[in-house]
Image (cartoon, rainbow, N blue to C red; front, side, top):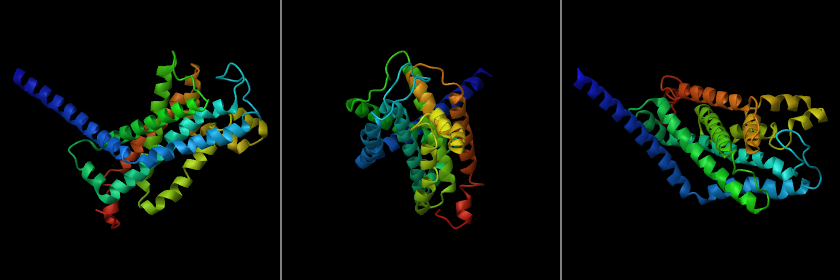
Length: 286
């Protein structure tokens, strides 16, 4: 009886070790691939830095942001949009991971991965973890360069764990959204059009560039309502409030809830009997 118990424990430990090795291999593969794509890091930084150096600089002296939560004083516009630009980095990389998933599927790599002797959800979680690691690395690079340009975010201090938690959850949420989209994007040619209907509405209909109260004050009612329910708004607000050690309200619940729902739907969609396997029936790549 004791030997049977020991054998069951050994099998369980071996299974956990095997699963962790698989996750490490997938994450390491993505990191190696990214390390050879210098242009990808440059393009990830150029986009938000252009907004910071040109757009924000142009409005720096036009208006500041009133003393509203989470701020205790007036702040310049560039400091307000900096968390939104961090969100932009996470958003674009999360969507770019969707492109990588479509490419891997067309090349047959995803089919190979999904036949591994591991739960399908674990394989997808490993891909999601790799996406989040790359997103956070790019976001950290942006924060450093932004500080060198004179827009230093209060990252370090007692609020640091809260900032890290908010950034990690935002990266995972946007990565899971990209994962879900990759289920429905069947060909690389359709990627650009689909992304235009996801990235830009999510970004511009949020608080990344302007606070909610300004939208309400200006009479843009429908934009205000959409921004309220936009999960990207809550991801940005969570990071913004975390930077100043303030209570983010319902933002964490919305972000984590969206993460769970998107990941669950993606796992369902990659079921060979449903979304992913249906490619074979339509004559898609094997």
